[in-house]
Length: 165
Length: 141
Image (tube, rainbow over all chains, first blue to last red; front, side):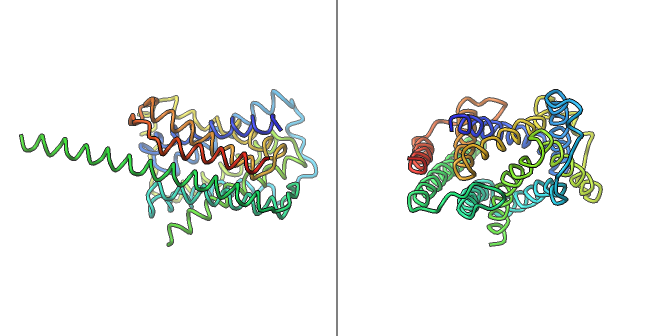
């Protein structure tokens, strides 16, 4: 239990950090150069760590089903969806929906016990827990949006003052 | 409407990715899973890159090498995500991932690290994170 929470916390922090780094690369190089670079480096890092950890056994891949080779394509699908979502909705609302959907599908697949997940029976408690988390995301993201608008307004005011004077 | 569909599908795919990776790692090792899935993802992205016009490798030189190396974090992210889903299931794992993600972004915004626009701490953002933690407590106990 504690180990699970620990690794989830590490994963989340790294995702937050990576998002910031990626957006910096994105500003200069565009989405697909960024995606290719990120996945390529992730591959090299996994390969290196895998070799350190498993040695040559890393290359012995038995009993892997064919579909597993295609699971990497899901990541590419994520990039396409996020790119278009953000373009059409703006970052705040897009990410708000992305996160809500992430939680909703996690609850769905946990309750169905799909993809080898240990089936967790769907209870009212779980439903309420996920709703409360979603409302937390909503409050967080909406206040972020207000802040951004406010700082933009401040900038506009500053600029117009300059122009007037 | 179309934007919402993209965003909802994107979220579903992120969860699917975590869950599928944790399924694959039951057959092969966790590092093998991280290596294989990022390899196929990389090849696919490379193929797309060949066909899109929006590419400019030379501009990469203007980016701080620290930011360029962010991709390497992917190895640790996938490893941690798989391990977390194995231990505590998808719902709880993803809830904690999101909390940690928003907390870190929040801290970076307040401190203005990595050249992001420094922002004041707002009460409603703290309330948002508080609500998320409360939700996890409800989930678990």
